[in-house]
Image 1 (cartoon, rainbow, N blue to C red):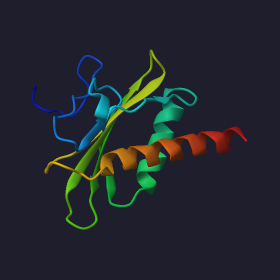
Image 2 (cartoon, one colour):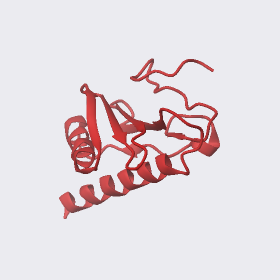
Image 3 (cartoon, rainbow, N blue to C red):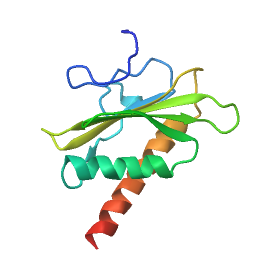
Length: 132
């Protein structure tokens, strides 16, 4: 397994580790797979929606951002662990790829998957509200 990294290399976010504390829209590991999010509008509008969601989340800070990439860190409530969320905005495919992973530990009790499901729901809700 290659060393984990943050960012995008050759259009790919880092692969999830073997431990069950990571989900990604780009992994080949079926137990960690999630569907990417479709763009809503152009690149700038899509990035703005993602940032809005992240800024509304408790204990979450955006650490790095470019036109096509966002890296945020979530600090867990009880034990203050840090989880990384990364978004790669693939303009060619008009898809938002993501990866959410715990930095330490083995199991996350499904927290990363639940977090990304909530982000996806909020993303869809914002899109629908703006269309209405």
